[in-house]
Image 1: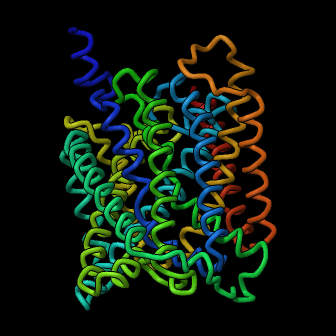
Image 2: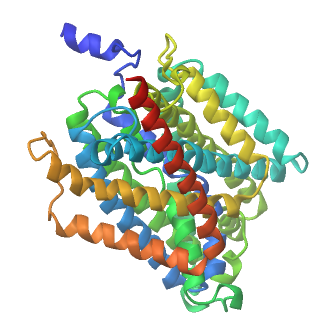
Amino acid sequence: MADNAAAATGGPDGLHRIIRVRDGLAVSVGIVIGAGILRTPGLIAGYLGDAWLILGIWLLGGVIAGLSTLMVAEMAAAIPAAGGKYVYAREAWGPTAGFVAGWAEIIVSRGFSGAAKTVVIAEYTVELAGRGHVPVIAGVIVVFFVMLHLGGLRVGTVFQNTTTLLKLIVLAGIAAAGIATGSPRGFDTPLIVSPEFAGLLGVALAYQAVAFAYYGWEDASKMAEEVRDPGRALPRILIGGSTIVAFTYLLMNVSFIAALTPGEMAGSTLVARDAIAGVFGGSAGIVVTICSLLILLSSLNVNFLATPRVAFALSRDRLAPAWFSKVSTSGTPVVAMLFMATIILGLAVTGAFEQLIAFMMLVAISVDLVVLLGFFQLRRRQPGLHRPLRVPGHPWIPGLTVALYVLVLATIIGTQPRLAIGGGLMIGTLVIAGIATARFRRSVA
């Protein structure tokens, strides 16, 4: 009993092992369900134009996220260390790969996604108020979350648990209203897609938007050293979270298509509002906008809650400045959190939502492919490692997952060469910095 108490109050690095399965599910569901399901359905409808294609791309995103979650859940349960995908890349391929995975997660995957969420929150705030400036509101939002998380892990998790529960209630209500009062006309009235998005380019752009909506399925693994009984709890958190998200997204899209045609959805910045306003009137649309802000705040909270743990892990392994490993008495890696906030704020003031998520997903999918390939490397190099969870159907299910990633990445690169060049330069820069950092570590060892 004493050992359990000690584990809960904190370890030698200052992290507090207090996260239960329900807290972890709140993190998983909280970071994923947010800007993606609110802001991207209008983009996806414009890219694809057909209700069945829209549902198909959301289903594909859920399948890929679910399969990826299985692989990460095995690695997380076997190596329950703070940092998530950084740790698995490091253990499989060495410190340079770990450096690239970790810094890509901080700067691009979570920096860009946090900025995109902040932009959408600012946009909706301006819509509600009828005035205001997105960069100014973005700054206020970032300062709010910095102050919240200076209060420590327990404050952050309480906020997350509360807002995630409210989020699911709100989304269930929106979905039920759309399905109950709508009609199937959305399935019978396709939109003629602009020639600009015809063919594979439209599919690629739609998948990038869907992948952004699902991204974060593995975020609870970043906090593994703060999870109680991680060998048992982490797989439940990761797999349970991805299942809840996939079901919610499919239900939401069915409700949108029941209430609106793809043409009515296309270009909308908040399809949920338009669907409900079309049935119940403008006042109901305003209520949905307010609820959407709550949903977005819950999602953005996890960027500040989980990502500083990646910077903490990098710092502990001397792949980031030593300041990032400093943890406050309340359990927050303060400097790492402030660094994360600076990145989010710097990107958010651009206000470029579509460009942020397109670049983010190209880099994220590339890095995730390396991490998932590390699954096979870990199985080969450490066959005796205790694995509380084993992915069923090995090697066929993991092999299918990797093949889907390769296909998606090839499609994005083939249809968006300029974006591919930018993403390649980012990854190449991280590789060079990782090699230099690894050599410096060896020289001072």
